[in-house]
Length: 171
Image (cartoon, rainbow, N blue to C red; front, side):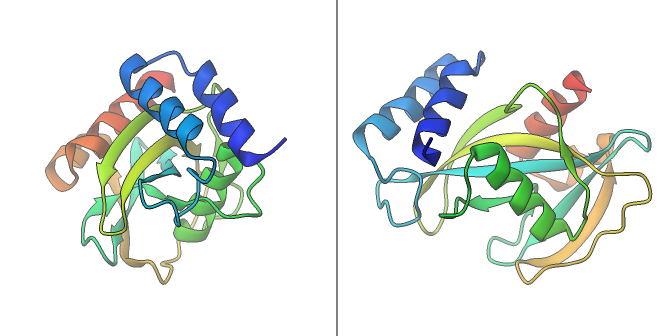
C-alpha cells in the first residue's frame, strides 16, 4: 500500500472534525502528490505531541524557522510507509528520544495552517515518552523544553493547546 493510500484510509477512519477531514480527503483526491512538499497547493504533514503522562507534561520544540513552541512534526518522506510512521519518525528525530510509542487509536486531531512553504494539512498524533527519557535538540530546533499541561496555553498557540487537550482526554 502506498503512503497516499494509507493517508486516505487513516482519514476515512478518523471520526472527528468532519469538515476538515473532508477537506483533507478532497485534497488527496485532487492531488496525487498531495503528501509531498513539492505540492504547491499544500500537503499533508504528520506530527506528534510527545507526552510524559506520569509527570503530567509535554515536550515542545522551539521551531528554528517559525520561532514558536510546537509539537514535533513535519513533511512526509518517501521512506515513510504510513502517516503514523512519519509522525513517529519526526517525533524521534526532533526530540532525540528513542523508544517513543504512539497512543493507540490513530490521529488525535487535524490542523490546517499556512507556513512559509505552503498550506500544511497536519495529521496530529501523540507519542508517549518512555520512563527516564532524555531529549536532545536537533538542527530544526532552537530549544526543547518540557511544559506542564497547564503551562501550554501560556507558551503555545491554540493549535498546540487543542492538541494537548485532546491528547489528555485520550490518556
